[in-house]
Length: 215
Ligand code: G3P
Image: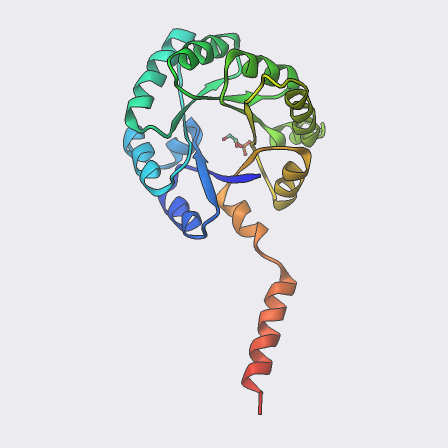
């Protein structure tokens, strides 16, 4: 399973890229808005220079034609740009049109496996089921990943990848990998958390103490 960063923050992307673990980046309008005053095109172009992999840029139109128009523009920014559209019937229209023009899409805000099946059938490159937001409703979000993974495996025509999104903690990363996700897109904080363990820290302290005390 690949690791993407779910952020529009250049410093976070630069840092995670230096760890050698980043295969792509996802953004959404909320994450871009958090980077006060930043121009969308400049942010996406800068990310594309730091990470050699798919970079999702989300359309904000609600109608399919509007999404296609935005997507065609995003695609001129960099060959690695993936057009993110919402999981609606208008979104499906955009996926279908963009796929016919050779432009890759990421269908986001997926909350049931049938949305994921429709997105794949329309020609989505990636789907983004929101595990954490499903968990927030009291339902097991990871079950969504298991179901989509099985449905895609059952249909040899489907090549669509599954991004486990709305990741909230390190356990979500582990469970996504076990459930069959192709990618987990993670906030920077969760990536940092996933590398921390008190026994690692204690082990380092002990090794250093023993090294200093050696005869
Ligand atoms: O980028 C989409 C998704 O990962 C958002 O997560 O934490 O806002 O539910 P969250």
